[in-house]
Image (cartoon, rainbow over the protein chains, first blue to last red):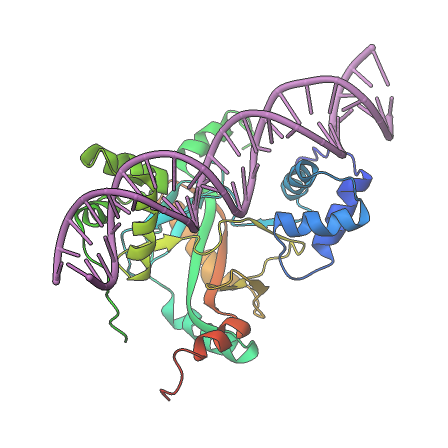
Length: 144
Length: 144
DNA sequence: ATTGTTGCAAATATTTTGCATCAAT
DNA sequence: ATTGATGCAAAATATTTGCAACAAT
């Protein structure tokens, strides 16, 4: 593991981190901004976005819908899964059959545990596409 | 099933549908727009967005990253899954342990089948949150 | 001094919407 | 005639970035 923790834990960054951690409701950037501004009225939106990025890249928090904030469309309406490149946002079909057995059981259980009406699931494999793999190897080469 | 197919399969809509179907690469809206414009130079971006919505809501295509085009952040960096409300975009943790056994096997298989470097997966259960369930029941009530 | 960070504002990027016109019943 | 769809442009949303000032080595 490489410990490139170059960033400073500034007051702003700490408050942003606390606000993300102090709720289970998966806030959006503007919601975080609103909460942080209650404590630091002069904080800027740019600072919030920048710090969310930094915190995520250093593993303090996680970005949902990572990568590119852009919708994509799929002509194939059959149930199937995707592999997503975390670097370039590329999406491919995963050459795998749906896990209906194991996961549909989970859907029913969750329908009871939560008060959600659940009617499907989405499974995405996260990785680097062949092109981005090559790209990375230029930098992280030679360590068997 | 309710057959509220009120939309007309206009020429534009058909071309848009064909372009989404004629590729496996999960195009974004602007990519679809570019391709459609080669065949219908006077088509507008608005028409493309409107038709993608309609086609998705009628089941001809699928929207990936459905719902709200907004990133969300999670203070919990442990592996866990989410339930997402398709109506309001709400995200909650799924009260389920990660499926490491079954799915991590898949990750390895996919790493061989494709040339991706795979290092994780994301499983999301799709449904309606309690609030949106109630909302819907107002309309689709009384059919046991 | 150097380097990372901030606030602010401007710029991008993405998606949605109002509206007059057009097309198909 | 009525209703849904279109093109165009403007608006709304969401995110990123340039830059001068600031803070911490």
